[in-house]
Image 1 (cartoon, one colour):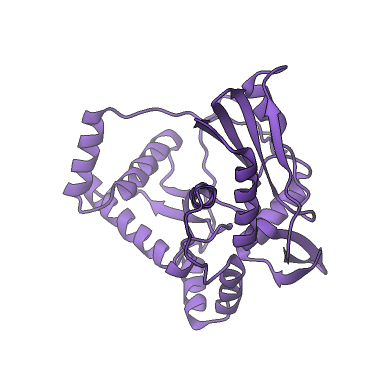
Image 2 (cartoon, helix red, strand yellow):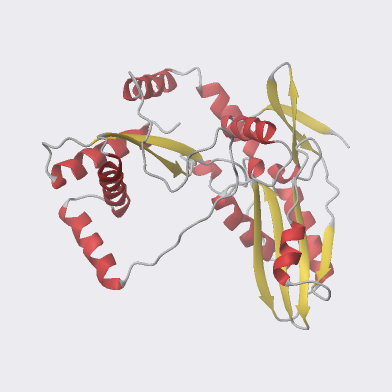
Amino acid sequence: MTFEIYQASSAQKRIYLLNQIQGESILYNIPQAWIIDGTLDKKKLENAFNALGERQESLRTSFTEKDGRVFQQIHSEINLEFHILSTENETIEKALENFTRPFNLENPPLWRVGILELEKGRNVLLLDIHHIISDGISLGIFIYELMALYSKNELPVLEFQYVDFTLWQNRTFESDNMKEQEAFWLNIFEGELPALEFPTDYPRTASNDINANTVTFNLNQLGTHRLKHLAHENNTTLYALLISLTNILLSRYSGQEDIIIASPVTGRSHSEFQQIIGMFVNTLAIRTFIKQSLSFNEFVKSVSSHILDAFDNQD
């Protein structure tokens, strides 16, 4: 198997480092499942997976480290295993849990696929992919192109691959524009940085614990309408308004006025990379100061302005 070696992107380096610190785990796996109703041609689907692997170089990428530097290796081909699973002896939940396993970043492919057979005419399409080669938008691209290839629909030729983004990014790190962006963030985080003293049920431990939970709730139609109206009144976006409200809430609980909130951005600031599978997503640290002298409207305006500046300097 032949491969070409390139320097890793900033996001890949970040995930690689965190993966090394964490050790063998599924912390950076992105498992997905889709229910398929109707007749499924498994051989045809397997061919579509292989065609997708040929089309998107990220799906043929592994990683290695040399002299403290991280490199991505783009392989000419991969040996993708197509798993056929059954719920005969276990529950669906258990089958999905067993399907999600740690990856060795040096051994491609860093994704696995399979079909969980429920009953005749009803299957579950399984995907387990490592975050170092994919992000949320990539998952949408993955399933869209897979279905197109399965249906024999023609897809436009990809003029660029993820490695082109990497080459562009590493080249622009030395540009004047990037130096200006660096100066912006150094100014934002000048001085002592705050640690949020948020009251918790249990004390924080010295070591990282990956056990966590997600709390999800729905806002009713009236509440949603009021928020959109409030955003319109302040000539801002719903996103900026919710960031503002979150800051206020954290300030009330902690008694602090200097607060930093992390917010993800797509990292796809150039149209050439919109249809590429890869790890583009970045995290912006939004720092705000909640001054008691400001009215609510003034505070929302200041947050909106800072968010726009942060997005302009997101690279």
